[in-house]
Every structure is written in C-alpha cells, then in structure tokens.
Amino acid sequence: MQPVLSEDKADLTIGKVPVKNLWLLMLYASDLYRDEFKKFSSVEDAPDEIPDLVSQMLCQSVQQRLRRNLTSGYITREDRLKRLRGRIDLLETARHRLLQKGQIACSFEEMTINTPRNRYIKAALEKLSTIVSSPMLARSCRSSAKQLYQYGVIGPRPDDSLMSKEIYGRHDAADKQLVALASFAFDLVLPSEQSGSHLIQAPNRDVTFVRKLFEKGVAGLYKANLSGDGWIVSAGRKLNWEIESESEGINSVLPSMRTDIELRKEQKHIVIDTKFNSILTRGWYRENSLRSGYIYQMYTYLRSQEKPDVPYSLKSTGMLLHPCIDQPLNEQVTIQGHTIRFVTIDLTQTALAIKNDLLKTIVGHNE
Image (tube, rainbow, N blue to C red):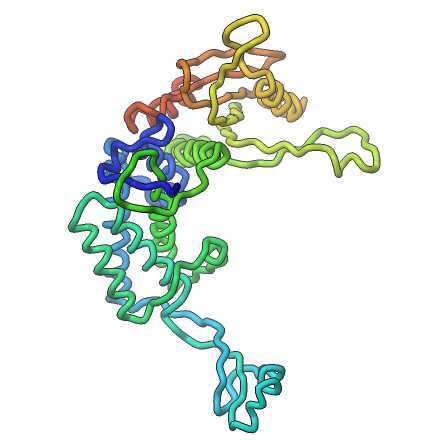
C-alpha cells in the first residue's frame, strides 16, 4: 500500500516522531542550513512552517532568475540532419542508408535552457505546491513552475546522481542555492501512517534512513551553531588502526572504522556515535542494560587513536547519542582516562527544545 499524506501535515507522525521534527532534522542536515541558517532561525520555533519558508525562498529566487534570464547550458543531441553538425554517427548513417536520402546522423552539443538544473527546480516547485499549508504559496509554486514550462523547461525530474555532477561557475553561482532549495524540497516529502488525500513519493523508511537522518541532522546543527565558538566539527571521518605488524591478507578482511561526528576545540575532543534505537536492552541478570556492542565500539574508537605526543587524545570523550524511546538517560563512566557518555534526546518535544538539548550535550557539559 502506498503511503499517503493527510491534510493536517504538521500533526503527522512517523513512528512516534512528529513529521515537523523530521523536517527540522532534514533542515539541520542540509547544506542550505549550514549556508543560510540565520534565515531559518524563526522556524525552529515552528518547524511546521519549514515547507512554506522553503517554497517562499524558492519562488522568490526563481522570479529573480527569470528577470535576469535562466541559466542555459549545453546538452548532447542526436538527430538526422541535411548538413554536418558535430560528429557523424557512421553506424546509424550506414544502417539506415541516410546518404541516399540526403541526410546524415549527427551527434552535437546544443545550447538550451531545458537543462537538468532547470528541470530539477521546476519539479521541486510542483512538489512543494502539494505540501505547503498556504494556498497563496501553493499558487505561487504552480505559477512559477508554469512560467518555467512556458520558457521551454520540459521533461521529467533528473535523478539525484545526475544533479550531484553539476558544476557551478562565477556566472551561475546563484543557481547553487536554487538547487539546494529544490533538493531540500524533495526531502520534505515524507510518508505518513495516517490516511489522507495526497499520494507522495516516500524516501526509504527503514532504520538505516532514519538513523542517517538523525546523524546528519545532529552534525549539521553542531556545524552551524558551534563553529563560531571555536569548535571544529567533522562527520564521517575514517580512523586508522595503529598497526605494528600485519599479515599479507589482513587488509582485505580487517574492518574499517568511521566516526559519525567528531568535535574538537583546543584540548577537547569528542567522538559522537548516533543510533536510532533504544539505548537500553534487556540484560542477562537485569531488566535494563546498556548495549555492550556499542560500548566496545566506542572504546575502540577512543583507545585506538591515542598518541603519547598528543595529550588530549589520551582523555578524549565518547558519547552514544540515541533518541529517547523508553526512558530518558544521561549517564557517564570514565574508563582508562576516557569518559564515555550515554545520552538520549526526546524527538517528540518541541523543535526548539530539541535544538537546546542537543547543544546542551556539548556546551553545557564541557564549558
């Protein structure tokens, strides 16, 4: 059964997490928030307004672009022509005996505004018109999409792999924000477990998708809000084993290590591992127990990176950060000089409270 989106989108949930708070995590995870996070400060109090703000920004940017002319680009075309243009397709020409018909099969570059970039933006406007709460904004989205169509932007939405290859120069730097807004618009379309009238395309809803969203959202929030205070925030850094000797085939079977989030400031170093399940599980002899595998993993991250000539590496902190599923938890233990913290965040509370709690886990504990 295909997921549907009900009329009152702000009150929907996925699992127990309100959709508006997943929108907030998507905002934090996006490049858009990192580059323009001050523009989004107001919606952190009311995240259900995020689609409306994104649609407003996208419509305004498109209108500005239309006044200055859309960015054009070259696309590859193949056609049968009466004169040579570009390269000759010898096989096609010979197979269909085109020379006898006074034609030649050519492959050539053609300047057009019907570029993948413009089609992507048009598709985003059409998608936003179905999820914004304001009827006026919905009309603006449809109107801007229609204008692009009238200019000659037609065809389906390009896939994300094609858009990831887009290169921006000085003359079209403004398009980068347009594409970022469009990309974020597609992310905002989430499935719901409630019934409604709008069929939508849903992203992968398995545990991996939600966990990666949580991880990227936390990393994006820290990058935007802590970098100005001297913190260096990195995500997905690969760690190296301190190997002293090795057998010939060990590299083909030795697992790699990659952290979710790392924060550095002066002599402080924090390694954060995010999960999207309960931080507690049933133990052998007790009702609740911390998950041993996660502790072993964090312990390995911390101890494997120790360097005698780097003092802070001998006392770096680890944090296992989970959503609050069963009960809140904020505990810590120090093992061989390294403090490991176990923290949960309640994703069902207000968006502003989520932001404040995430920042408190770093600033409130270390400063």
